[in-house]
Length: 87
Image (cartoon, rainbow, N blue to C red; front, side):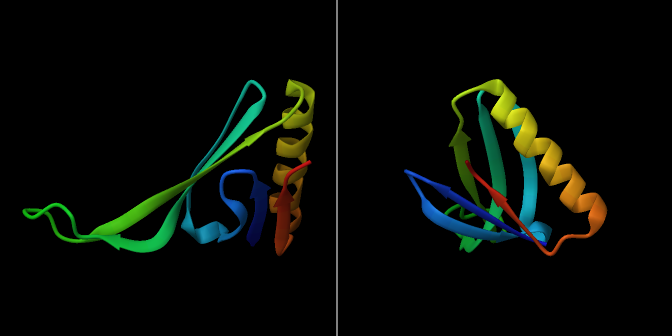
């Protein structure tokens, strides 16, 4: 499944579900942490590892967050190939 998102900070982001580490909903926000496709080599004594990207979506109400998360779970259950996280 591909996740499509859009917010003010990152613009449009398309993320394969296989690269998602965490989707967290709290209050009026949904936070998606994912492997960005870049490699971090900044730590000298550590082997290279994938960098994390993060998208935070803010909604007007908690009910909107609940509705989007329920739609996402339903899409996963039904085997959908794409899902749009947004308003």
